[in-house]
Length: 493
Figure 1 (cartoon, rainbow, N blue to C red):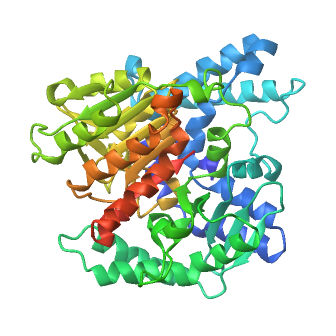
Figure 2 (spheres, rainbow, N blue to C red):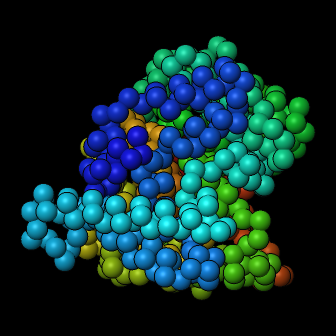
Figure 3 (cartoon, helix red, strand yellow):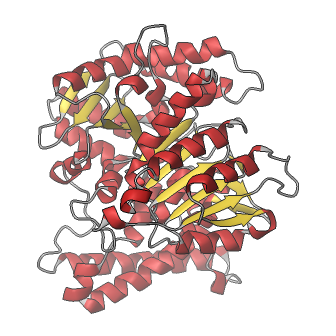
């Protein structure tokens, strides 16, 4: 499937082609492996067969430090060809050859792709590089659980299972015997419809959250307790299929004197296990070893009055809440928040907070965007950027973490794009957010993340998930209805 999609030069054309391929192939292969007792193989199948578009792009940006030292010529050739392929992927047609016919451009793309594959084969012939860009095996994937357990949930057409990856242990299988994909699809359609309606039927939302708890999350929590995963610690969810658009983090009975998942563990999401391995390295990247004495640069993009959009009164309140805890943040307000200025800021700041209008394009996810002062900043624009010092992003805009319901396994949303550029920890929203909630969530998140700043000079992007957990509890305490506080989600480290 991966090679089939690579026949098309651009991400948009690959995505259109992907929509024509049956979705259950990889999930059913994983289910078959589970039936045969090969749980590690099932994990490998799920890793290799999902988020294909992101995986293809990640290959072009794979770190080359060791290769550069050992074989600089091969590293140079790989970098040059990868850049050409990335240009084709993000623009569809390379800018310098925009007068070429489609046939000529396609022929040129395939020649570059062949040369790239040849270089990869040459690299694999070198001692120590035999596994260069090969699919990772389970021994690598289990490293994703360095900071806490990761729960993959496979939604196959014949069976559904949760797989817990936990430290050095073998993967732990939790069969979800009473779960059917058709039932999850019904709840996904219901949730998608309700969260995009003008008036929300709260009973429908609660019904979805209770079904998630009874059928999927409660059995997993029971197993986590058996594995001695301490309440209050962090866990990561890696769902598949339509389960990816549902708020697993908010599952629970939602009844008086009953604990919901958010009362037991702090949930984050990851699109793949490999992503989490890269975000939680055993050895911190250069420049982050002394994390306890680290003060990042925060860029705040605030757009209360974007031309052509409805005024957002809460933006200025949100900005004030941020400045209360991060007074030296760099602010791009209104007219200063142009698309070029924001793209430049992403490259020069390690933390970014964007509060503005956001929208999801259901026909073309790569056109999903933030509405800035001069024009929209699309998902494709963000992919084109590189942020070498990136750590934390807070996307306080509608639909910033909303997946494509027709291809949820591809995780095509703005938060994922920010992660692709290098941001290790991202907060986003699953659907349209209430303007009044932004300032409350921002204040609680930054209050928590900067709590040690005065005494030790320390802030840590890995505190974002806990900060968001505190913020959503604050919303609940204020009587904010469930459909609003469950909207905020955390991805990454």
